[in-house]
Length: 102
Image (cartoon, rainbow, N blue to C red; front, side):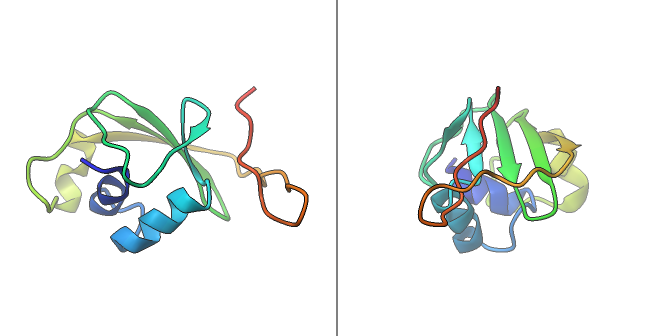
């Protein structure tokens, strides 16, 4: 399952296009590296999501077989841990760089 579709199904974004923009803006990391929205998840991955007010660590437990998941079933597929908000560092030219996981 694609990262952007997984983020949409688990409720981290309202639409797949919004999830794609998160990935394109380098706000979704896996193993310290920005991921493309088309990256296929297999289960067992850890993702780090950066939102304006918070960062969220997501552990992918499994992937849903269907293209829709009810809110009560979401904990079957992910475990979520919120971290304190940190502003990503700025790159030259005003664009935000992905944070390092040092």
